[in-house]
Image (cartoon, rainbow, N blue to C red; front, side, top):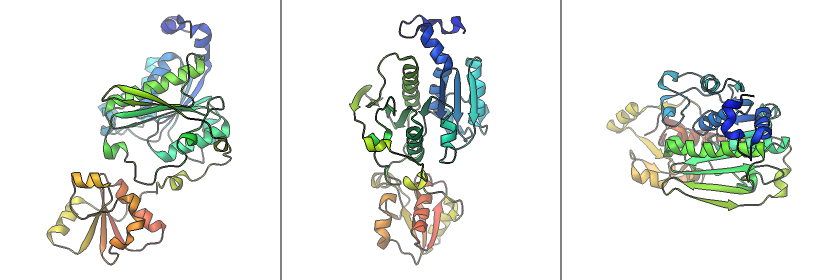
Length: 350
């Protein structure tokens, strides 16, 4: 053990040599290598958590650099897990880091989780969050969850020492498109650092036994006011009865996005100039449509199937949203219930 490296935390009575040895022996799997996970990984590695796994299939893009502080401009288009491992070992070469450049799925979650003691979820979508919960429950693994939205964040610890699970707090996922992601609504970069650091702190507390773990407690933080509050919630026994993993993309209404049947903004502008006979439907939420739009009618994605009468299926339908994600899902949603028509997605959004 590198006593000089860890001296400042070894001298803490709550940690000591025994706690440092526990950190060294711990096995922690981090889901994601993005905004939350960059500070999570940096602080766990610096603290001497001896065995860390990183699951992420993504590559670095320029839009990541505002909040994903492990990466630089020179890393664009490189695999996140490879860059992260290199940077983390530069911080602490004594840590064993395994990388898994894959998307977490029902096919690989149980195998990956079985190798680790604690799971840390830094994902940005509900399908992965429910998958992490269910796999953790099946294997009886505790996990630390964090999420961010604009200027607000949440942290909690689930399935710890028979405590509540994610489903005890959020029994059902939100309907498709009802909660915009960071690409659609935005997030301040420093918030990812704050919430990610809180998640790392919970991991260290769980390993060493220092302090009180946020089990059965949801910490909510507002960066604009610097106020936080803790909401307590109880375990619901039936949420511990999960035996099998399911298709979480379908559970969360997160349909696969096809790249076919798209139209770009230049072609759409040409159609408008030519007064071509088509229908433009904006599937964002009403407040987004009112703030700025390119015309057409507004049918939120969440209301699409209940608003079929407003869609003229005899015309070519162009769906649009902020980035092109929800509009692509609108097409897949209609196809999933066998509604036929000529549907185009505005690539890249408005």
